[in-house]
Image (tube, rainbow, N blue to C red):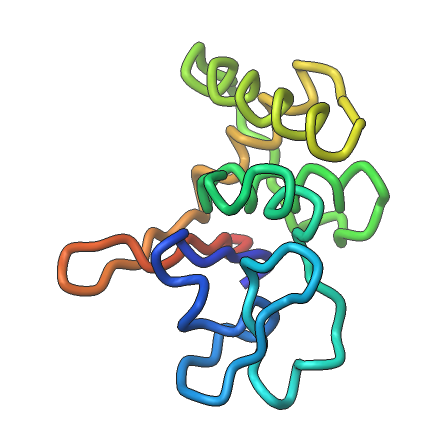
Length: 144
C-alpha cells in the first residue's frame, strides 16, 4: 500500500512500519502506542506526535489521511500515487475538517481545506478497510 494504519485495538499486535503480526514486539518509547517487529525496531515511529498527543485515541483513517496529506504536501509521493477525483463532496469536506483539526493540534501544521478535501476524495478510490472477526484491524490506501 501507499499508506496504511492499524486500528487502535490492533496497534499492539501489528508492526507500525511493515504491518507484520506476531510476538516479540517493542513499543515506541515516546508515544507508547506504536509497536515494532524485530526487523523494524530501529525505525522511527511514523505517527508519533499524533499518537502521543491523543494517547492513541485518534482513528486509523485520520492517521492514514494525515500521512498521505503530509507526504503529498512535502512532495514525497509520486505524481500518480493520488489520482485526484472529478468531484469533492460535502462528506469529504466534513472529514477534512477532522483531519485538519488533528494536523493542527498534533503537528502544528495546516493545509488549505480544499487541499485536504481533495486528498480525502482521492483516497476513497483506493481505500481498503481490513477487519478481523468483525472488528477493524487496519485501513490501507492503494493507488489505482
